[in-house]
Image (cartoon, rainbow, N blue to C red):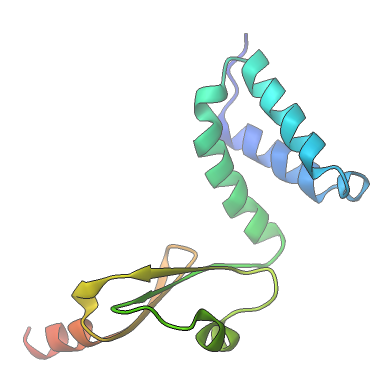
Amino acid sequence: MAQYKVKIYAEALVESILDKKNSANSEKITENFLKILVKNQDLKKAGEIINLASTLLLKKTNNNKIIFETARKIDKKDISKSFTKKGDIVEEKINNKIVAGIKIIVDNNRQLDFSLSAKLQSIFK
């Protein structure tokens, strides 16, 4: 069978999800998509396809994936109100190495680092 590129699969999946006619059939879309991957012997690419599709879907809907990285558990609701909008994906990571403060990562490429470890590193360079 023909082996399609991950990007083609991801784009097709996103278009199917965003198609207004399919809005009530998300389970059917997923089921059919997996059948296509099995038929084309591309099931091993599923994880990569889903990651790329997630990124593309966020871009097309003007949403972001925002990660709040802190040294201790925080109340996500309070802080996310300032930085997020409806439809954004919000994750929290605990990282003891930042000592105190917060690091905010948007779409895995933009970063605001308000951590104590970053401030100490800039002082002692």
